[in-house]
View 1 (cartoon, rainbow, N blue to C red):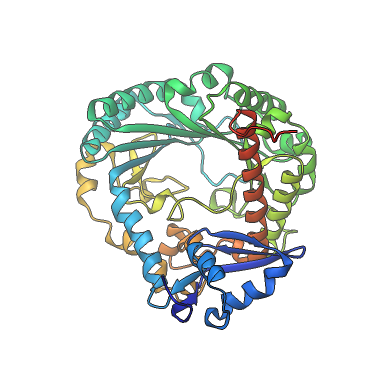
View 2: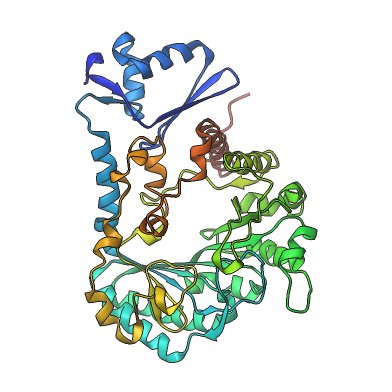
Length: 454
């Protein structure tokens, strides 16, 4: 066992006060503890100078959670190992595809980051995609599909056809299969919800834009009809009838106009939705396709995360399940993986894009052998470890350098959580406590915990 004098505090320790308690969280180990008022001072002293506190039990507790490390530990090397092992190691055993069967949409949200184009994936492109996937599956163990768009549910026949063919390929190759879909929810009808298991879809993300009044200002059908009630009814049905292993996500797009209406949105859904779905909040950012319009002018820089955190706390207070902001992935997003491709409706292949133009493509499925032979050294060689600001950031293990596309353009986009780390820790603590309480309640309900004798 390490001695007191051989320990040092982790660079990634983050703390905050909640009432009289001290919350300590480590962004690398994901260790999280709540310390009562009697121990606060001693724990704080131990985290600053372990050798100055003569308490072997406390040292062991903090070391197991990753708050204290042996002196010889190179923490940055550990972060780099996790990052590169995921990027080039485990990533190689899984083929991840984001498939856009169309870039067209049945809505016209003014902030949309994509340039809409009419057109749907043809049988020829589908056949080329199957050929490409069959080749790639010879070297991987898992296939993960994300259905995206445009609005992917405009192409249900494509989704049904390719899902069946993908699963047949996986069965032939001995690979596992899972899929997810991001949709505006208008066409998330009962038939599709009841087909989720057959399609291998394990997560469904649907977007809302505030209360019924605010949502309908943004998300309207070509006829001018609002979509709030239709999407809400579809999502309610999904929460009631989707298989238990399907993750249902409710994304709330936030702007200066709708942010004040969100409490009304919380109250619009049934208790069943609150028990089943996870909610998260995202500010709408200026996008090239939307003319770089700022949809959040009244939310000053430096306060964006605190605004989102306030919404999370409000949702938690009303019994919602809030998505945990400690991302489970060791990279920023799927774009970072070496075996990830975005496939457009014309068969164009992208590493990452919002515009999906020919200029952005690295190749086309009609000649997939060619783009597979072209190494992407500069793209995958990008990393946050050459960036001095990233090296000194407590949240480096959470974001791993942020958006690769932004960094590739020569800039850096820090995640909002860096604006207010104590609030970030407080939110993680609140969500984690509720997750534990729900888990224990579920175990008790299932008879795993017997009641205490009277």
